[in-house]
Image 1 (tube, rainbow over the protein chains, first blue to last red):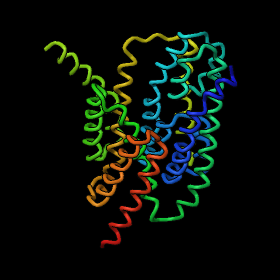
Image 2 (image 1 turned 180 degrees about the vertical axis):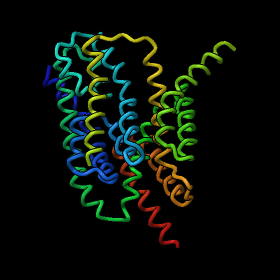
Image 3 (image 1 turned 30 degrees about the horizontal axis):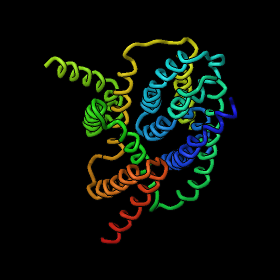
Length: 215
Length: 104
């Protein structure tokens, strides 16, 4: 089952590799050194939150820690679903690599070792991509002209992550969250705005949905 | 910097616990998935707008980013490849920046 999982991880590997390269370049552009960059990929192993960490570090340490963790709270739901599907004997090991994509493929699994295969493939691609990005980033960052365009990779990534959320009530959550963040950003409280966006937007959306359903 | 290492370790720990605790204790939480999915959408949107806009607004920089974002959006809709779309965005951003600089 482990080998089957490893083979099934190929689409994840192909998707993760370029993102990991981009992460490494972005991290180094934002002032992280080579060791910090590889350590982030090796220990965190969660794409969007790693990007959030490096993007927010210049603003505030608290936000750079809290917001990536808040982004990963959705993994609680993944764990709930997987643990009810079949028996997890080694949660300490299985939990480490349970990313969005691994979770999605795990829904077809009925053995924990299949998940381990998926996780090992995905993790190796993530680490290897980060290493390649570090090597490439060191060369690319020597160009002053190119640095603003490399920093733009974060904005591009956040847009791509936002696209699947632009449907139904999630679009409303995105608009409310974006507006709150922009207002606070304009008065210099960027990280506070992002935190409030994550906390308040779901409450506002729920209220709006209740209002619409009663009218 | 020590702050960077500390942030990496804390985020890693938070991420790991979010993955581990429900597997270990077989948590069942009602309505949490809906709240978290709205919260994720709002957070990503917040990260997007704050990385795009800086105050005071510099319209040239914003224009370059908007043009590059159109390229990112178009390539993602066309190929559904995250890494490729980011690369397209970076290249377009660089080319448009150069073009604007040369026009002055």
